[in-house]
Amino acid sequence: MSKETLTLIDNRTGRSYEIPIQHGTIRAMDLRQIKISEGDFGLMTYDPAFMNTSSCQSKITFIDGEKGILRYRGYPIEELAEKSTYLETAYLVLHGELPSKAELDGWVHDISYHTNIHENIKKFMDGFHHDAHTMGMLVSTVAALSTFYPDAGNIFDAELRRQQTYRLIGKMPTLAAFAYRHRLGMPYAYPDNDLSYTGNFLNMLFKMTELKYKPNPILERALDVLFILHADHEQNCSTNAMRAVGSSHVDPYCAVAAAAAALYGPLHGGANEQVLRMLTELGSKDRVPEFIKKVKAGEGRLMGFGHRVYKNFDPRAKIIKQVADQVFEVTGKNPLLDIALELERIALEDDYFIKRKLYPNVDFYSGIIYQAMGFPVEMFPVLFAIPRTSGWVAQWEEMLLDSEQKIARPRQVYLGAEKREYVPPERRQSA
Ligand code: ACO
Image (cartoon, rainbow, N blue to C red):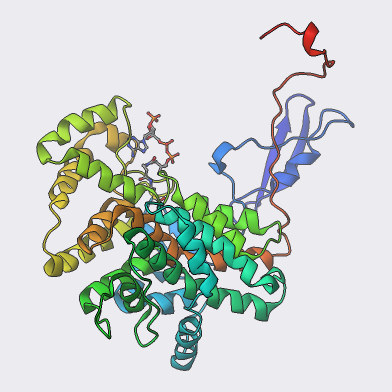
């Protein structure tokens, strides 16, 4: 019978070590016993950018990047996108099981009950420059919520954690909508809790003088599906930020602000904004071949293409393409779609992209839909951060309750100067 162990021989000493294998991994700490002398620190692994290191055990999201599989708590993303709602999916991501009808009603009620924000938050918003980026406003104001809920620091009190969860999921759309209206110089529209989660969000964004805002049901559902697709994605850059910052036991508002800041970057959730800017700059299908040539020459990247984990296709990108068709039935086709399709066609036939397994990711088409729905590009990363909040909070809670987790603190390989003596400035030579 095969043994679930790994035998290592250290050629420096000739000693051999047997290390257990569990779930296809070895524990990096098991390497510490491998030493050349008593005083030796022991062997470490070196893995910049976590290319081959699991930082946690998780039961939330499963991805098979080769096969293009994404599941939350075991449920395929395709089925959730077809049959679930964002709030039901958020419940699933957070609790591990789909809710009963009564649990779902209670959950929707509790989230809706927490959509309002303290009036003083509006004063923060007013302090931002008129053209401040909406993501900057969101990151700052979600961090500011920490000062309104000082009991949020009691992170090991399950009831208080539940309270902050309701508040975070309930208030993110309100902060986002207020940031949007601040840029436009429009009066803030308050939450309408008769509406669905996404219906209310559209209300807070787009309500004008009408007494009651009525969201278009197709656009409301399209946004809900996009929110489902963005609810969680295991250990990506922003989730890793949420876990790492949360591991210092800071309150969840500050940890979510850190995660949202990580999401803002153009290589992560900021990519959808960059895709739109890229397509707009291209302006016409004819310029696609010349642009692809430049990308291949290393002059910039094809934004919305490539993924650290998906090396075949991104299942979210497939669903988004279907959503795009439904949205364009209402809004009319976004003229940038033709440029995107041409980019995809040429890239998927090109050796450079085939060899590197570069395919459209979730951000390639989401921006085109958001633009057709009337969102300015600055709102795109914000539209990612709102639904990802449920995933961040679920991952944070899992980290807190995991007895193996401690404050995240990687090691380094020091390659700097050896010990040397301080020399006063007048005796130093310039470098
Ligand atoms: N366009 C052109 N070339 C690319 C692209 C791209 N979009 N992505 C990767 N490559 C090339 C790299 O230049 C590299 O080529 P080389 O081997 O000749 O040096 C090779 O493919 C591997 O790329 P890495 O950067 O090593 O891959 P990594 O896994 O680190 O990066 C990432 C993944 C950041 C997503 C990358 O593909 C990228 O920058 N894509 C564009 C930005 C984007 O769309 N981000 C959104 C990702 S999805 C999300 O966060 C929600």
